[in-house]
Length: 211
Length: 192
View 1 (spheres, chains in turn brown, cyan):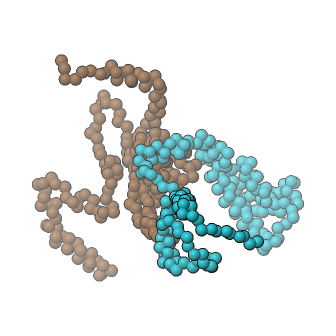
View 2: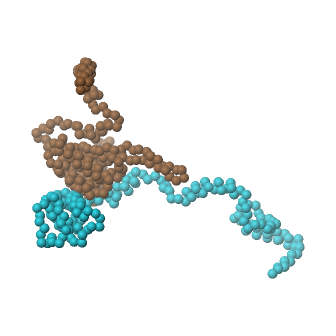
View 3: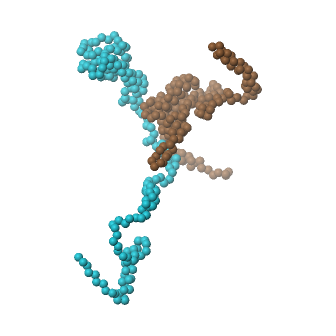
């Protein structure tokens, strides 16, 4: 007990001794933010670009402006699944409301469906807690896609002394939730619309470099 | 049957004619065949299968060609499939996941369920309860092969056996009757 108190006091003494050497005080005049303020992490724990998108802060809106809908960016890294297989699920839920997306994923038999469901629930929770979203159902999925994660290489043994290099694939999954009802689906372009566009292109033709 | 061959020495004119005839015959027979023109050779009594002196060396050289030769007749892609072609195949509507229109809300618990499938949450609850009932039965029977020939009825706290329950085995559970009084639950209970 006494030894612990002594070591505690010793540490505090050492800290006090070196307090003059605190670099923040020395560079108080400069406005350069120090590395100690930014998260110094090893290569594997770099904060990705998608996570940083949550940190942007807009200036306060003027009274007349329409309300800017809240945007929530969430992702999960290095999921043990293929990015091509994950893409099908991401394509399924893109543009849906969050409730519909959760319903579809719950009854999908793929492995990635469980992972994406967890990610969506996490993002919903984040939205309500940190991003000032009023109703957790009032969110829709604006963007959802998969990316390639870090691959590991292994040997796959074939007959006749041949071998192949097996890739242990992993993927990332990114999702962007936006407050508000989902946008109405785009009506497919009819023949009439295509014809109108064509006629407009013909009408836009002109002679360049002339009077 | 012996065949008699009569051969007479041809006259000078005939000899030339015969040589020319023989040459024409040779050429017509050996048109496609490579090698030198055949000459009359001595027939020798030889064994049925000629032993190949160079068989061993040929075997070794044949091993690699046999493996490689078979490749010439195997199907192989002629050109690399471009990413555009690959995308057209991978993103074809038949390969995309289809939307499910048979998802409903369970009226008992409020969770999602498929129309033709039991609600997962309710099923789990019932399964747990029936597991505990089975534990009670196991305690009562105390050993294998002791299942009675009469029906079983489960009674919860505060319930008394009614007239209908006469002659049935009673299993008591020390909790109040669970709130999920749906037909399904009764079905499960009466399965014992």
